[in-house]
Length: 207
Image (cartoon, rainbow, N blue to C red):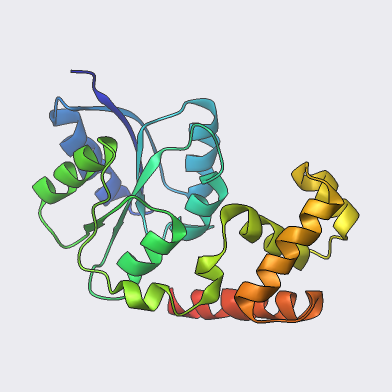
């Protein structure tokens, strides 16, 4: 059976060292690299793709949520296991960000290893998450393309710039914008942008 290529990222050097030793001892895994920052993780996996990334939820400087978001559209992006405290909103927020699994920082070592193995096999592994909360914000009902358009819109791009940026026609941009407005219950660009920043602010405070 092929080994699972894995990369670890944690700001605490003791945790990183302990995790490295744990994965090194398990023959199912091949530890490719470690990093103390989200930027270091990003730089490495862009050069050397891995199957699974285990990342601390509060990884400096970007944070795990932003790191996952940045890599989500990348063709060779790893499947992410977020390593954090399961008591709060972190599991739900990790799922919303696009992680494939969540391992409790206070849990046992075997739980982390099994979570990574299952995620590598294509499964989603999370402690209990109240999915009802995930659907309270209509932004989560947007498709990936619609979210990309909303994010670009928030940067002040015109329809023509959006068309060029995303490689689609201006008519297709208008079609997607119409869907975005409808799903967010807004009437125009300004309201959509205001909604986007309001949602980002709420998510930052939750994290």
